[in-house]
Amino acid sequence: MTQREAGATIAEWLARLITIAGYILAIPLFWIAIRIVQEYERGVIFRLGRLVGARGPGLFFILPFVERMVKVDLRVVTMDVPRQEAITRDNVTVKVDAVIYFRVVNPEDAVVKVADYIRATSLIAQTTLRNVIGQSELDELLSRREQVNMRLQQIIDEATEPWGVKVTAVEVRDVILAPEMVRAIARQAEAERERRAKVINAEGEYQAAQRLAEAAQVMAQNPITVQLRFLQTLSEISTERNSTIVFPLPIDLLQAFLDRTRAGGQARA
Image 1 (cartoon, rainbow, N blue to C red):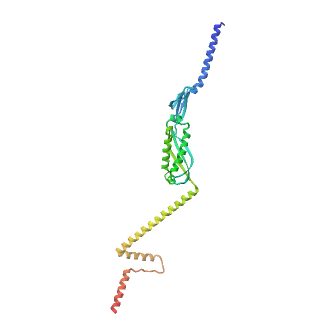
Image 2: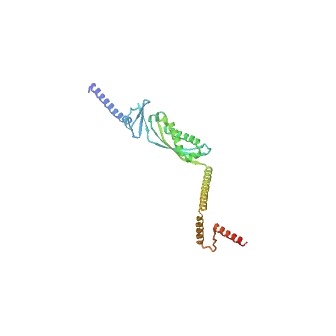
Image 3: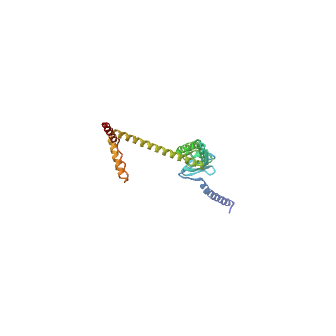
């Protein structure tokens, strides 16, 4: 074998080794470069540290060691707000917990403008919940909870808007009071029920008195109704099987009897 043939053989082996090494390196690089973004996700791409934009859904390729992709979930996140203790505007200590619903509407802002948008939203919700409780009265927390929910949603949504996060709803779940406050509210409710019962009874007595006055006026204008009432009373007495029956007489009959008695006495005189 000549020197030229030996050099050609070495070159061929080197070419084969380089080709094999290229194939070996190409396979992992291919898997590194390929990215699949789901329908509910967006991929935020950075090239050499600079923001390129958001892509998805679908299959994408990035340049290994040059580009980087951060996936962001666009689905609605349901998060429990830890129980917060605060004092209402009317100086009542309460413990309140809530649940917040939010989602990412701008993936680029959610990645670039805040380190952890979920944790940041949770902290904003906690501080806002305490502030709103301090601005509200106990009766408002108990009876007008929908207004409190709307106020919480508006304030938290304004705070998270720069992060590309949209707060869709906030719901206050439980308002826990101290045991002595619960007893005080129960006593107040009982007093309110008694007051309403007395008002209803007074109104009933007033209406009954009005009806009696109207009936008396009708009887005064129509004497025959007195006779009918007299007969009805006799009928009711007879059905009771009493051993003694008292017959009430109309005043006009007694008056006529008295007049005749006086006239007879004057005639004898």
